[in-house]
Image (cartoon, rainbow, N blue to C red; front, top):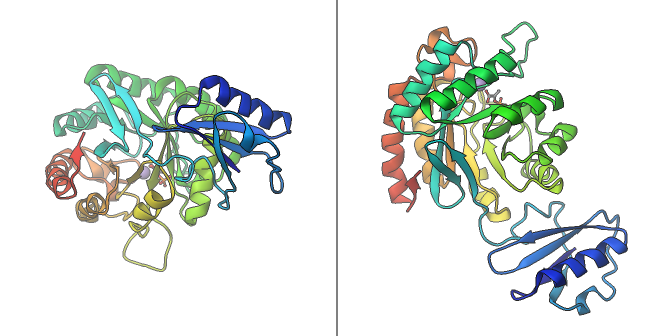
Length: 342
Ligand code: PEP
Ligand code: MN
């Protein structure tokens, strides 16, 4: 159930409605929008008895919500959510029409490696650096990331190059540390339905980049974002990174059709990761072009200065110069779809 407030409803009126909802034993989650505030009612098992809610001062109407997700839904908030990431080189935004760019190696390997890639990311013109200090690997024998020393290297990258930091938390324990160092917390595909991690990320003050699980449906993807938002963190960026199919010429099949599907149902920004989405470095540029053309709010690309010697995902990593070229082309395609690169 959604309680829609009038555009001129006062804060006191919103508060009074929330109190009434809570007195009925439900949870009230106000979502302020540009024109009006909507209040989501959650915690109900069946239909909510709206009783006198509709008659309360400031209320326009009570609308039953048929979809399983509420806070992520455009029914609750018509205008796009803009997630703003402050970096030492200025703000990078996702969802306001400008396209946000994120580049970096799959994993932080050494200080020298992270600095070499960061230098390339910066000179290409991007302001967000992504590198994993905690890596969720299929094999327990593969490189698992440097852990906290890796986070410290990321902090140095931030100071030295003025880049904002995106890095992954793989469990509640690593999230405690990651949120101290990162500007954006990544939740990886394998953790998209790690509900305790999603809830913990929802209690963080840092924005969350949530990757789609490799076999997740659209509803499951949006419900994962709902978990984060239901704990109070409304700064969620969704990320399409490819799904498992029968295709045998890519690591994953990049499902670009989910971009307009998400934008129709949700106000949250969605970015595309053509690196994991294809697994092949020669496919990264063409799929990046396509992602921008389809209307993605950003790109997340794996970049390495020596990809053949990378400790993880070298096959899908492009060189810093190729990333710079990608940005040149992205800018041209963005103009055609009335977007800019930020
Ligand atoms: C990664 O971003 O390096 C990663 C492991 O991605 P995903 O969770 O999409 O597989
Ligand atoms: Mn990777």
